[in-house]
Image 1: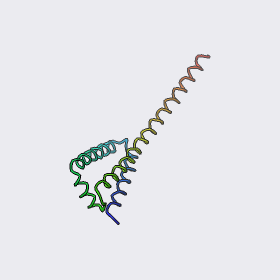
Image 2: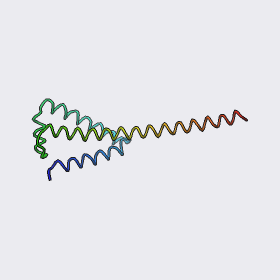
Image 3: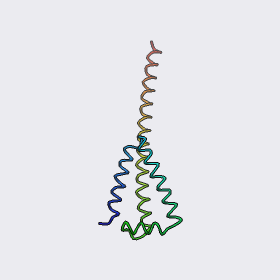
Image 4: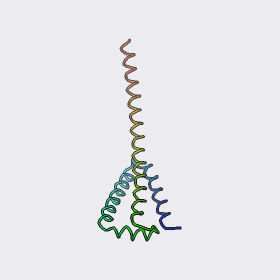
Length: 114
């Protein structure tokens, strides 16, 4: 088994953890740290592409561009998951606001009839 397989498994477990805890301070800190790390890694591998190739060989991947592709795919899945969780939260809040407004409107209409 190549070294890259456990790394991908750890990244997937990390994505699941971040998706569940994106609201906490620690979760937000980790998300920002990972984003900063990925941006720095992207800039570094753009300026020095041999770094990506060396890391890819250490992980058992053939080329540095394959490593960048794999990490980009995992990152996009993580970002999509976090955005989906935020949309779910917004949808729940909006439903709650609409329900409360409907109850208030109904009680006001009952008071107007009396």
